[in-house]
Amino acid sequence: MPRCLRPLLGLALLAAAPAFAQVFVSSEKDNKLYVFDAQGERTGAIDVCKRPRHLMFNADKSQIYVCCGDSNQLGIVDVATQKMTGKLALGDSPEIFDLSPDGKTVYVSIEDENVMAAYDLATKKPLFQVKTGGEPEGVRVTRDGKTAYVTSEVANVVHVIDLSQKKVVKNITVGKRPRRFVLSADGSELWVTNELDASVSVVDTATHTVKATVKFAVQGLREADITPVGMALSGDGKTLWVGLGRANRVVEVDVASKTPGRQVLVGKRAWGLTLHPDGKTLYVSNGLSDDMTLVDTASAKAVRTVAVGRVPHSVLVK
Image 1: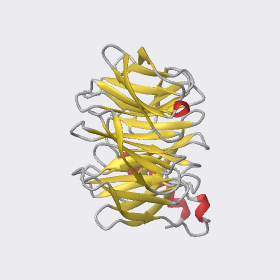
Image 2: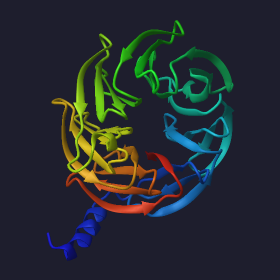
Image 3: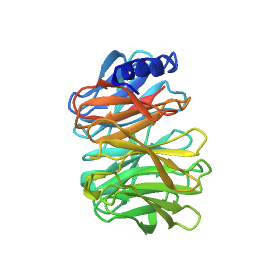
């Protein structure tokens, strides 16, 4: 395609994007959530606690929970008023969290204390802690609420935690520096990014063993420069997008065949990923270029990059 036509293609793809959405991006250095529409136009900014990282909606998407690593809090943001209306005290340097299926309990990796901690969201009281390996990060609760998975970046394992027993019942050895999780659509597979192995481990959730490893390669780059962290699963469960970190790319993976496919060049240190509910647009936070890239998933092309404040971490789409 002639270079002069490429901007026109980008405009056409953006025009085909969903007419309405709210996109929220956490900025670690600005202590804010930046708000955008579906096409990447900034519409607002929300002051939150210090060093906001991971974000999640409550069940009806009326609230956003934001984990703040430097104020040791879980902030509670009202989506309608775009104000932080509450907070819950956490341990030292909280990072990633997940909710129980009933939305009543939050499970948080407390990085500097090497624990996964559980808190009651209604009373804002701690419930229990489970000791983990060094630098716990990813947390994923199964859909039946019985099990939590937690990565240990230092131990290179996934801890399997029985939530009724409140203890680790198995450690699964994966790749180097495991970071984040995605559960497959049917819950039979747990996908784990290995930041220092340029790979994803696929864990069978019935046997809690590694059944496959997906390796990534980028032409012209060393393996050490390929550092996968964030992932986003398509609504039909057939495609997984993986952020390749310092490789400044995202890659599309076929879930059934475990085969990497199309790659898209985005910003610097592509970690945070989320898909619009219609699956047409992938939003990518780029932590070292302080921006967000919008990717058209049908064409696998980056159609726009917008500034989002200093050190963007996570992205949510409503």
